[in-house]
Image 1: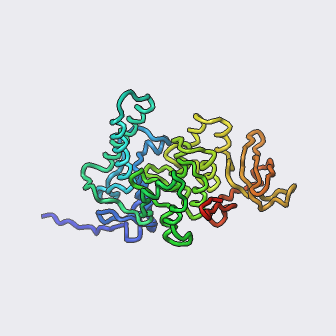
Image 2: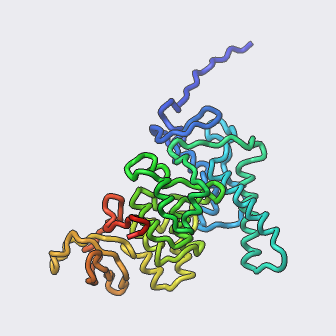
Image 3: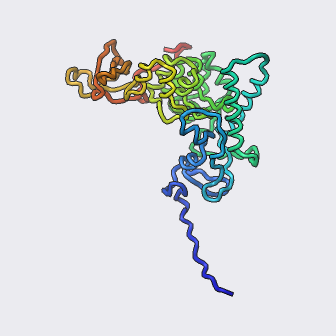
Length: 352
């Protein structure tokens, strides 16, 4: 019998190294098979929202299959259970389809196209999740907010019942408030309070929530922020919560839907140009303005862009003055809970 030399086997992934990026694990997520990876890495390997590579590459939601989706662990190829967002989207799409099928009579071409899109997206999600899913196991993300938004609180937004919402949030300085202000409602596509404020054009409540730490980039189960839902889905008025979102730092790029491309095709070209500019509709700080040194350090909101001269029309935040400034005299200063620029308060049953 021929002797063979058994070579030692080395495991190049130790307990602290991510097997995808080969660096120290950042917010590790452990899979049922026992392997763990950085949260951003495993969600890049298999999208946490169930978006396919084609959807992310083309920058729009499309009717597509899931043939290119990686379902298995990068190390051992054991199945990866679905994320909470994937399950919520699957259930929401199934409910939408059932409701659409109950409608009698003729439907418009837009409704028919919407039905086909949702049907295909449901099929894509089910294929990604797999027929072998036990219906219970969820890929838990330790960094994800686990607080669910109660239906009775969500219904307070269209009724403008600010008192009850703030009572549920609790002390603005508490951990409870920080957790609850970004809570999402699973029965409605993981919408957060900010998403509902966007739909209802409740800009005052949205401002209060942002002042209390709501994340302007909080996403629903299909990775849509309040700004995405406004621009891409036409939910709510841009003049209210859409502009508010931009002043609080909402991003216009990096979404599953290419917002700037959509604006160019659907909106006024000058408006699209304004949003594509560096400071369009952003809150900014004035700096290095030699002609008006008294304004340096003050804040303004950019209202217009002059592409011919690469200048901006700005409105001072605490006066009625408007100016034309170069981009060299501006730097972004997004609103934050510590620097909101103004306060919207709810006292004695009134918002001021």
